[in-house]
Length: 227
Image 1: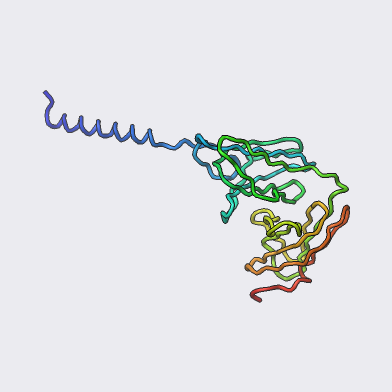
Image 2: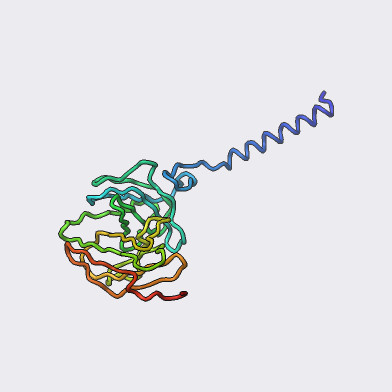
């Protein structure tokens, strides 16, 4: 015969066991996303694959992505100390959707596809960092001759819609008197810079010539917005 106090203890033990079982059934398993990127749920059925191939002569030191229209980039998706060297690749699983990519290269430049990439469930989307003959490249240099720090630099070919992605590394600034250069295919480019206070300047179209440097001097562009 179970005494009243023993029966009460039995119900408590059964209740705790039931709660523990339910909790175990609902627990999220985490996967390592690498680098400083936040962890997320383990890949689920219906995920897609993104394969990033480096066919350039430069190494990729950081790789970030964000869903189109999202305001912020992810953390670095490469493991600490990992580098995608020329002719190497890396594969990632992520939910289906439309993503913008940003590859930060060993020479200080950034590269992004000319259009967002579409990741589909059960399929592999390949993103290629292309190689280019040196003779087919020119140098686009931005020099900050203004008195204000620049927080974002965007440029794109005159044939592409929009300004493209930010070319400065996350959290970096182009301070007064400093310059930064990017190797780009020859063509005509327009430039937009955003200052630390949120005001912007835009340039007319300039030609980037094979094997030559084209200099955008920010101090020669009238600063719009707040003074």
